[in-house]
Length: 461
Image (cartoon, rainbow, N blue to C red; front, side, top):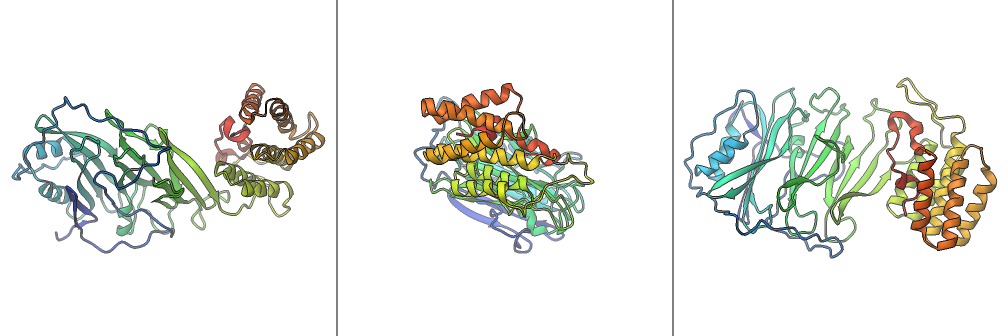
């Protein structure tokens, strides 16, 4: 394959793996840190599901004819499209005409401009849970100094033919200037992430403002996508920000799959967040996010930020620690927001962010005390909660800056004292806050505001 670099070719037949690859060995990603392998696969499940999170996957009805055509080789070659990289139907026709998986891999590697970088994979693995091997295909084209294009497909058998589903479209996304880093684009893993015994498909892609190849000075966002069989079709399992853009992202970083909580299911752990030196905004800082399966969908389980520079960032750290159920860190972060004189107040910049109001510290202090009250109630330390409650009522009288959180504390305290039910107290506080139009605290910070729900920031218990 002269004048051609195949970044990755992988052929999985039954339970055996044969890797076909050309080009240099992968180099470590920038920024440094653990990253996912270029493509890892499983046939069936090697994971013991956690009893608390198992959701049985419906099987394909037995009445369907799942007969596959014989793949003995010799199918007509796939013809190049003049203006599209979607070869879904051509791949289905090729395999239905008897083309073998080895031949399909070769067809895709030599399709298109031979000087372009490509990332190609052909895998045979059961991704529908019916006990029959399906075919997973990835074909990415990476032209020099242009946007990446390509797709991922799953092919299942029906009545002696292959039926294809496009499960990922990577059109008009960016690539890396370093070819070895392009192995972290597209298909990343085939592994059971939900505990149902059927593997999901994990993908990632990157975008930059100019959509040029990412180099050491580029500020970029990496998006993650998980596709799994829901019993009738392949579905996106990660939350979506927009119809074509997943909400699970990391800035200038990557992710790894690891069992972070010991439940025998791997979580998606994202590390990054900081701006490239000389680029981005000072609000940006390093962070680690952990996403895991929760009964019927993926949910954000934990966020850990780098050290705060601004007072509101200490509040964000407290909120993040509550999400992680790390009470000591949460209380320490809130107390920093109240008492730490080294933390700065944001006053706006040339980017046009909304400047922090003059009473920022009072509002942040009231909110932080309110959250500490909730933590004490959640942990049964009612005496400590009483001290915080009394301090809020004394220091933030009606009409003063931050008094809205003293009023919410009063609602929570009265309801909890009567019912000893923190969830009921939270619901009552949220209803009152919504009725009064109390806005999320982070709306003070313009474009970089956190998008809190009322439950998140008012009473997440």
